Length: 95
Image (cartoon, rainbow, N blue to C red):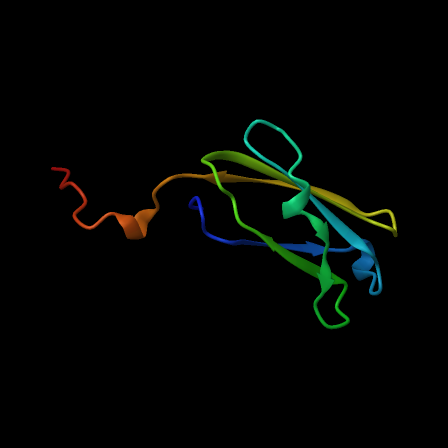
């Protein structure tokens, strides 16, 4: 993951419960809640899967916590860097 690139978080509700209200909380590398990056997720069709995007603005480990009103919970971390592989034009040759 790279600073400034959008990350799509997808959450599968417990027992694929459709119609749940899934809420995402995003924490920056200092473990500070960033309310503007979280919020209610959108269900993908009627699949019990929910999605929402956020865009990290600093390098480090970002944590996302999702809770839904049916009792489901999930947490995931994303390591965000200032560069990604597409930024490397001429990688060094290792011999």
